[in-house]
Image (cartoon, rainbow, N blue to C red; front, side):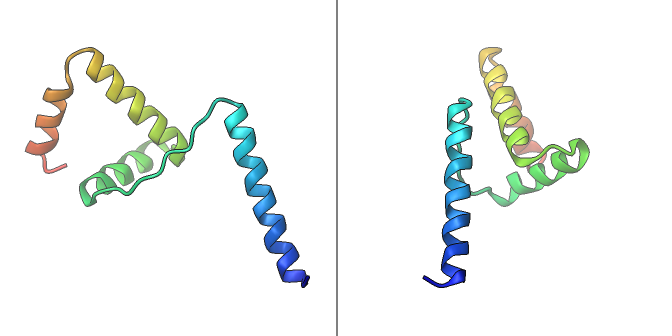
Length: 85
């Protein structure tokens, strides 16, 4: 096995261990693609808050859940449409 192969395996092992630690901490990885509108919102929020991806997604989901519980999802969605976001 070449030195480069060992390095690749080493990185894969580090990633596997990282994912295991996150899972043990009760965290779940989510994946997806952002629409151009969502990407503009993401960039704006990231610049204003300095949140990393994980914090931004976690807070976005929590805020969406709060809007749902308060019956405000329709209102927020209408605002997004009106402002081309």
